Image 1: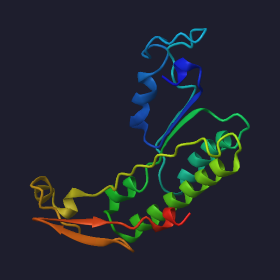
Image 2: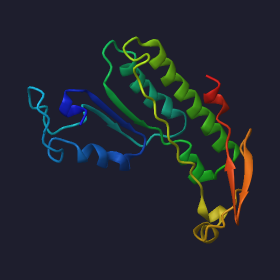
Image 3: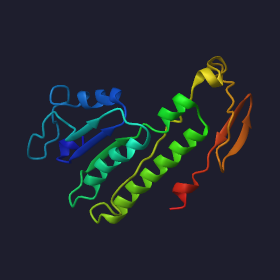
Image 4: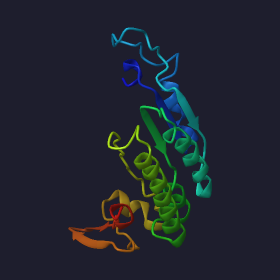
Length: 183
């Protein structure tokens, strides 16, 4: 709907399989503009799209591309960025490993760069909602797919600053959000 109201949009995904999002809203598959704002803004709802398989330190290049827009005098009205880490590392090496923890720190640093760009651009400052979600990534062949499916999955590692809570047969880990919350 942002595009139908004449707003500009950007989409950056770190997994090629998310290209379906761009294809779903392109000039062929996008819904017709149904909002009467003085003109037809077309069916292509994503003005700028980048969809690549990106992991590890290369995510900084993905963030650089987003920052180029966020630091512009007229940034896109709506920007979506999907960073494939720490999910990629979690699936290949498991949740809670040193490499996974390093991937979390790397993503945290990139989020800091994004927040700094928002904070230093007058066009975005105090007018921007930043929504962050995460997928932990975990190899079920290591933690036990059968136990996971039965709801009896227990974490083998505790994140730094985290705490454990026992709930029935299931143990949950709550990680500290200190690096972002301390901002």
